[in-house]
Amino acid sequence: MTQRTVPLSSVADIIRSKNAGPFRITLDVLFSDPARYRRVRDSGAVTRETVARAYGITQQEITSFFEVDMANAIKITLRRPRTQGAFGEGDVYGCQQHVPLLGIAVPEA
Amino acid sequence: MKQPITVLTPTGTLGYGFGADALERGMSLHPHVIAVDAGSTDPGPHYLGSGEPLVSRLSMKRELTQLIEAGRAANIPVIVGSAGGSGSRAHVDWTVAIVREIARERGLHFRLAWIYADIPHDRVRAAIRAGDVNDFEAGYELALKDVDEAATIVAQMGHEPICAALDQGADVIIAGRACDDSTIAAFPIWQGADLGLAMHMGKILECGAFSAEPFAMDVMLGTVHADHFVLEPGSLKRRASVKSVAAHSLYEREQPYVHAGPGHEVDLGDCTFTAVGERQVRVEGARGRMTGDYFVKLEGVRKIGYRSISIAGVRCPTMIARLDEILDEAKRNAHRYFEPAKLQIGFHVYGRDAVMQRLEPSRDQVAHELGLNIDVVAADAEMAHAACHQLSGALLHWHYPGQFNTSGNLAFPYSPSEVDAGPVYEFSIYHLMKADSPTELFPGHLENL
Image (cartoon, rainbow over all chains, first blue to last red; front, side):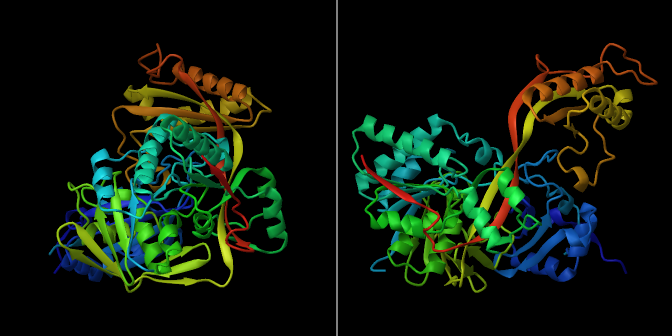
């Protein structure tokens, strides 16, 4: 039996990206409901592998991946493809790089 | 610590505003200090390189006036960290001049301290030769050549240089580049507060009411006690919640459990967040410790040339279908035309992949209308302008197979169609350097106004 899935955006409350210094972009997925957080955490749907696939990058470009129980959050940090503000870079604050996370498939409740 | 210490942080970045009513209510809670961050690397490398301030003089003077008047009326210190945006000498001097002007115009008398955070190039060279510089996240070891090329180098100070100014009786402290949490934590630590608690509180308060809900650039207060601290927004229209505060603990940083700063680390692994009433959150569990060596983070930029840009819309589907090949050829032509000048030519294509570039998963979903930003950087402004104009002109009248519309390919919103954007900098130094002491790199100055 295949489990039905929903997009991550339908179960998480905040999905955001932001600079963590000029060389990294950090992605936060936050849940207001601890039970939902634990269900997504334990489902194996959001991992280094699925995040790398969503962004079309290698897992080596993900510098860290944390499940942060005290904040009901999953935190992923990427090496920036271009240094913040370098020639050709397009998002100085790194705040519009979260979109591929929205559609990651997670199990329906 | 003889008593709990309350810090009032008026906003996340000085110059970005706060509510006058929120400040008034916050001051009615009798804070012991007003402390605020005024800068970051977040707006990019330009400010450190050019010395131009991040916010307008108008905003800075208006907000500093409000804070200094509030601080003087309550007889409490006002501390500003990373003054001017980058916290370079130019930015500290700019801010100090505004403070002097405020004192003169308002008839205020107080002791002003300012602290520089620029690191002389020779000091960094000596540190490289001594093996005292490590990469932080730049991805390369710092070379002497990087130092030679750097326009400006600053280091993030810890709380100690600010405490030294407090020792000297400063009422208003304008600090150059400083760790944002250290700016907020300095006064409580000076009063004997626990390092870990004060730093954790500083990390949350430094963004003002961004840790509250609804979030905003607004007033936030934190009171540090012997074994915990309590957060509360200044405005009664906002509340601190366990969710908003815990979420903010993750903001803008990679490591959720260990926050490293100059000469210290804070372990947040055992933190707990508890609601107190409707609007307050109690936080406990942060454990701070001093590290053996005292490392500071260097930030440096180098100038890569001068920029000109041209913005245009592309609406014709035949042009949109061939855009990549046309842009590639126009770029090759421009390089040839201006040989031997070295040009950096880029195109940001909005409506396709300008925002996410290589990370864009939906590059094939092209909009019916595209925004094209032609971006040129050259060694001098004249060459950048010439090349940008050559490109926009060539693309405007480009001929391609299947073309219906022969009168022009680009819809320019502006005349002139090129904008000269001035000097361009890029981050070139983001490394850790060992300091001999917490204060040796950060000279303080005093003046009685």
